Structure formats: C-alpha cells, structure tokens
Image (cartoon, rainbow, N blue to C red; front, side, top):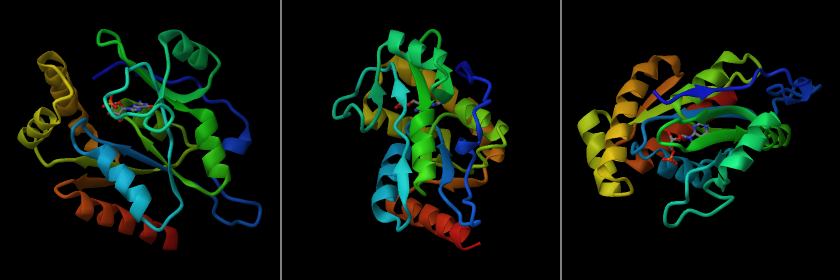
Length: 214
Ligand code: 5GP
C-alpha cells in the first residue's frame, strides 16, 4: 500500500457537505476507487457524459508526467514536486498521497471540491484507497462510495498489459497495490464489477438516481 496522508481538516463550515438553508440538497461527493487497470477513468468519463445528473470530475494535482493523450487541467493538473509541496503546505488538498520510491504524488484540490459542491454539482473523486479512507474518516464529507474492479486479478493483469503504459517493474508494483486495495472493498458503499463500460455506467447512474430520489 502506498504511503498516504492527509492534513487535519479544520476548515470552516462553508465546505460542509451540503444542504442549503431551505433544506434543499446541494451537491454530493462521490468517491470512486479501484485498482489501476480496472477501467475506472473510462467509466467515470462515460458516466459524466451519459448520466443525467450534474456530475463533475474533480481534477487532481499530480507530479506524474502526462501519458500520451492526457491533457493538463483535464485529466490532471500536472505539477512539479515543488509546486505539489507548496500546495500541500498551504493546506490546499483535502487528501493526498505521496508515494515514496516510485515517486509520484497525487492530491485532491480543496478549492475544486468546495466550488463544485456549492454550485450543486455531484463531485466525483477518482482516488486510491488510502485517499478514500481519509475522506471517509472526516464526517464532513459523507460521500457516496463505489469500488470498481474487473472481477479477478488475472483479468486485471490482462487489462494492464493491454494498456501497455507501464514497464514490467511498474506493472508488478501496480498489481501488488491492487491486491492490497481489493481488501478494502468492504469499506465502500457499492462494489461494482466492470465487465462492460456501458453496463457499468448504467448501473452506477441508476444507483445515483435512486439515491437522489431517496
Ligand atoms: P494514474 O497514475 O493511473 O492516473 O493513477 C494512479 C492512482 O492514483 C489511481 O488509483 C488513481 O485513482 C489515484 N489518484 C488519482 N488522483 C488521486 C488523488 O488526488 N488522490 C489520491 N489519493 N489518489 C489519486
């Protein structure tokens, strides 16, 4: 499990997840985790396009270099180590993970989440298990949480190899992390097995619609 931490959260009430003075529901926070290679990013993008709810992806900051096709500000805010440290020290993250060894850091930007929730958006955090646990621990967020995975580790390895973005050492590290992450499925509200993007998107959208009605 990569090391992860989060700053103590003592920010004032305006970030509280969400209800207006009239008792009207404002935004909701949605946490989606799952092993790398489970198709999370594809599912999340399709969900935002296809589901008839005001969904918005929180774009994290990362020190990882962009993969081919990734766009700064859309997939991540790609930042230097120094900028990441500055954001962390300024308490700009609601959670972050710093991976020592492999070296890439990721963090959820407080401002993005707060702005989205205040404007009634259902803000999606696509984050790892440690980050999710940090969010679960803070009663202010009260997120809807989903764990997406491909069913079994063989399928996961197959998908990661097909994706071809990692060398062998990184692939092995991601598989080991995945095996550890799978142990935390029980901490999430919903377990989603992603065999087909269309089916998974429909399933998650229905879950969210039902929660909106309830
Ligand atoms: P990737 O490098 O494949 O884009 O992401 C690696 C892992 O980092 C994924 O599990 C992804 O969900 C997670 N991740 C992305 N952004 C964040 C973040 O802001 N916080 C945390 N804790 N994990 C993140």
